[in-house]
Length: 295
Image (tube, rainbow, N blue to C red; front, top):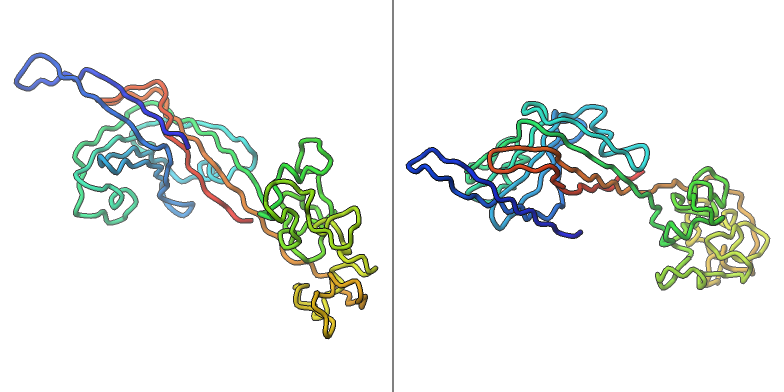
């Protein structure tokens, strides 16, 4: 992720021993890779970024509600929204410390070895978020190549007709052999022209319900009916039954192995119209929080 650098020069009038103001330079050279404290069972979320070399942090606190929980698990992509900073339930702070702040931000009992040196808080402003997600079945076939009909909509490509689109389906032909184990892209170069094709028909193994073309669908060559086709061999054979055209025994087994896929959620937070003692900005891109959810 690209780094950014905000350098903001402000005049801070100090009514101390002199009448002229000092120039304070705030160098927000954070990496924009955000972390989070709290989950749906907590009272608050805290989104934060830490700069280790100078012991600084940017923190954004907001309450755990049904609406705010949906920020991190959106139903549609993209999902955009905003909420206001009020200094109570929603707070934005820039802080400096006398040591590594990682032991303070998320701990119920903060580390006693590090203290906050300066704490500047916004009393107004707003926060904009954009939540996006990418689903993937991790079957080694890039999702873009699972658009079988080429119409740009991954949701309507379902080779086996099981109601799960190919890009979310770990077993695209419902033969109980996971797609990734049927070598759809042996050298992982994104070119499926060399996909494993045991019987040499028009369909590669990962889309073929009868991989060895022996007249028995692959799923029915599971002799011990345990959902694992790789441990079923004809006596003396070196290839499992489902890849051995010389055995055509049928073992009817219609239990499909369970399916799961991952969703990578990215949430970009931007703080707008903040005005605190040493920092004023119309728009400050706080950064992106990312998490992976398994379905």
